[in-house]
Amino acid sequence: MERAETLAKIGVFGIGLAAYWPQFEGLKERLAGYQAQVEARLAGMGAEVVSAGLVDSAPAAIIAGDMFACAQVDLIVCYVGTYATSSQVLPAVQRGKAPVLILNLQPAPSLDYPNTDTGEWLAHCSACCVPEIANAFARSRITFNVVSGLLGPAEGHAGRYFDRAWGEIADWVAAARVKRTVNSARIGFLGHTYPGMLDMYSDFTMHHAQLGAHVEVLEMDDLQARVSQATDAEIAAKTAEIRRVFEIAQPGRDKISMPVTAESLRWSARVAVGLDRLVADFDLAGLTYYYRGLDGNPNEELGAGVIVGNSLLTGRGIPASGEGDLKTCVAMLMLDRLGAGGSYTEFYAMDFVKEFILMGHDGPGHIAISDGKPVLRGLGVYHGKRGHGVSVEFNVMTGPITILGLTQTAEGRLKLLAAEGESLPGPRLEIGNTNSRLKFGLDPAEFMNRWSEEGPTHHCALGVGHQLGKIRKLARLMGIELAVIG
Image (tube, rainbow, N blue to C red; front, top):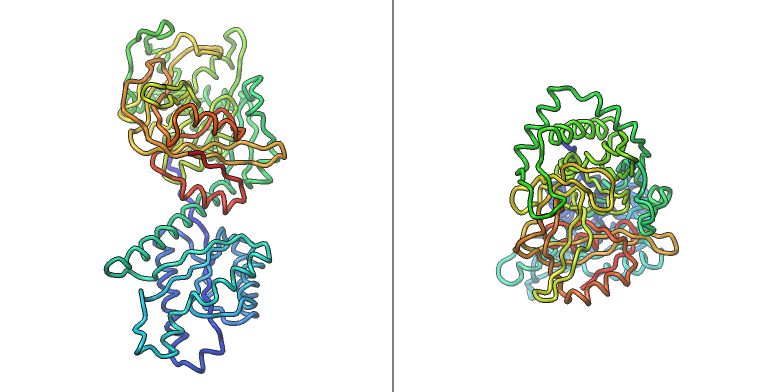
């Protein structure tokens, strides 16, 4: 079951002043050629480009804005070819109703000053109207950002202005792609939130309203029916997949550690088949779940058997978060679509000798970012939960990492928290949980103080690579507050 890629839909319009065209032969065509280069690069980054062409008057801007509104673009790119009045730019973004990226990209690193005439200067004067346009957007309460630099590659130190600008633009495209994914995501909520975890109680309407996502409320019966339908052939195929993906551990020192029996492995495989069907039948982009159960009843047995299947789902881009943590499921989805993974994580312990924080969880992990082959470990007890069975253990890849949390404020607004750090090598706890040694820019005590003071949910998503540049842009596009720690 392959996950379909979502493309960012980006509206593009170039700007110039109609009065210039009869005065300077070939200028309009030259600027249109530059705009075509911009659009080709955006398409090459995985964007669906909706082009309104070169806009040189207020009526043309209205037409462009209507086009963008009709196409429901995620981001409007205003390519500044030469000077244009702000009055002929504003309608395109007012009617388009999407955040705006102003591209101030000069065709050449510098001018041949003694030999440059007015027409040649006008082909390079994109910087002239950018402050004017920014003023109009700011006073109109339109969300916008500016990227300045070079249109094409250049030799020597000037080349960094091309690399930096187009690196920024690529990040904006990536953020727009994630925005579209979240806006259209269907997140399954299976069961209920872990009782008493006040930080995780969440208003479904808030998610619909502020993210555009849909929360599909599911019953354990929905999963039970699909698990019972699993055929012997499907279970055998899933068992083979599990054996291929995971290493099976022998019981360790932990007194709750047990062997992974053939029976428990088959049950995990059967439940995984049911989870695959649940995701397909309800067209889910993510799943959050928890069910307490009682005295070994069928729902308790079912809830205890989901960790392996949900780790497989998470590893292929359908994030699953335990304990009914809807907000962290969304954060995991964001990190995954940024190409960073996004493993379900909480704070485990502080190491004041080597100055790292141990982070992990007793639930599904993003096995695609495991540092080595992930491990299956049998547990006779799921600490703090009912039931027993097979759990997943690994640490994330060593190297740069990012954690991303999604919480909510007292005012009912969603809020992102993020920090960059490094995953360190070293032994992990062999307790059937994911756990990694993470070092941040602040010492462990100061980091915990700063992170906690932002009012987080106690879980977060853990991904690989430094992703703050993209996360800042995503928060900007979605209108969500972002707190950066460190």
